[in-house]
Length: 125
Image (cartoon, rainbow, N blue to C red):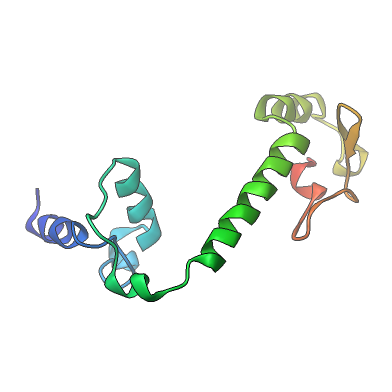
């Protein structure tokens, strides 16, 4: 293992990577990407930063609840990857204005609202 990586792994054994210890211009990934990779490999620091002990976690818990709710809504309403890709393939040669995807009784077109910041244009070819 290169010395520079060994040094960072030693640092990351105490805290997850962040913008202060990752040079994105040199390393190619954002610091959060390193965190996700390490956590995915079950590489977890034994403790969090001490400052986190002084923060109220209610806002974070509410945000997690909202993310879960939005995820459940999207899973229930958006087509599966197979359904979507089958639809895309069946529409080959048609213009984007001609496409319409129907899942069950719900149609997805350019005017359907999926979430406040996302429109059905994201699922239309």
